Image (cartoon, rainbow, N blue to C red; front, side):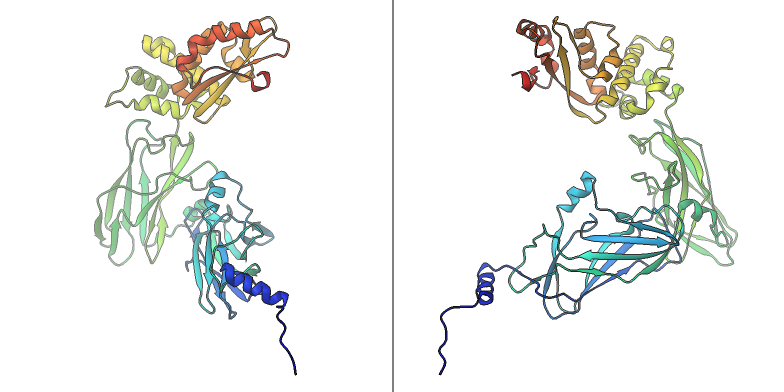
Length: 462
């Protein structure tokens, strides 16, 4: 005869505790999770396309599994692409934008036998810049040590890794795509100016010819996209891609020609890098795609442009409260410094000359803090009571041609050009007499109404 013990085994106590807490139990044995990668079938994809990379997880076991889907931060997931002897690997995300996005990683569930599908873009994982047929594969880890999905009882935590079988994809750089374009059906020719205009729309013309033996139906402008290529030959991010025009359905007979206008709005490249771009138009349908020629389209602000912009901006706002010429120069201060130094002041009126000097100084100060926002100007108080800038860049910009108070006046006068909110902090030497520190506070007190906050003393001196 046997008697039951009132004591419970450690494993039973753990199970009871987990049930009471309603939490997921860690997986005790290796989970059988299959990962499949896929991208849309196509003869090729152009690098710069938002090429979908589809992740499909299949739970081959009989337990319900929970894991974290991170999207594209490259922590749980890793993607690799091989081309001959070249192999590219995705690295963990380090940029602030990607790490912030990773905060939105979410708990995901895998039911036995039921696929879970997640969509990403290939460009989220890899920066590919060479044409070829790539072998793509991926590995995914369900949970990292610092991840804990919030799931209910009955779900097992999947902490293992799974690797997808390789898939193949033909990828072309935009330049190679243009070079091998097939013009047997629709030929495209893009013509227009060779530069983007600073204040006016830039107008181009796209000519189409139906070279096939049958009529061709075209949906304007939804079948077409703009591709701006930067100096490296890759597609420029955040550049306009859509052609803005009234939708039309057009049927081109054999050998019929058609010309359509394309307008790049003024402001489309505000804040974009001043450089030499190339533009082509991509005609893409479900059956085929073909590019136009690549037309040069420089985005520059040369001396003549700046002369005109300063003349217009010095007159003040023209429509409402906006002064577009001034805004444009402020956006590109970091790039137009040398050109500003060559603008002929004698050709400007008095307001224009004043604005030119302000912009020249602002361009010289831009490297001190390239982003708008709070900027703390540190001032050294020497043993003899003199005041000077701590940072070399500020000293070089002013070159000590004026008293420090006048230099600070000039800086505060141009703070809007820089987008700065200015604060001042005093940094005396340890041996600087307190009387000199008090005198510096008094000397600079008149500036405080234009400062972000009252003048402060170096915390180490408090």
